[in-house]
Length: 209
Image (tube, rainbow, N blue to C red; front, side, top):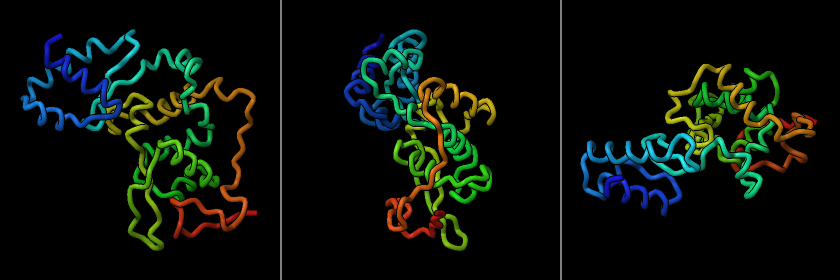
């Protein structure tokens, strides 16, 4: 590898988090061509069967483990959050990914079930986030996917999403076998009327007994 590739490699390793590509170019005072050539070297080295992969998403770069080895990594470190993704959450996540920005009510109109529980947990897992409020009566919250979502499913940009049915099947494959023996229940989000999560404070929330 070239010296520049090694420098970028070191930066990404030490960071452990996504780094803006423009920030790297600016601080290293290199041209776009120099950066692209160095990154191409890294992409070749950190791909395929390599235990570490180089991810590019939303004009950022980051090192991540090879998804092919997720079960083995999980067996040792058990950091994989997909275990917590139920079918209801996967379907909700897919809807947000393709329809974003979208409100909770709009999600529920598509799924025909209450989705507050799924939305809350997807927020907790960092898969979706509040991206604004819709300019309509009540100013409901708008949800969109996060960078963590792109990283988790190896997607560079939201525009790179495959066909909806194909993507939903991919999401379900990730969770196959991880939740064996667990029965999914679309449960109400609140046990008591006063238990409203922070991201819904100020929203009109109907509690169904």
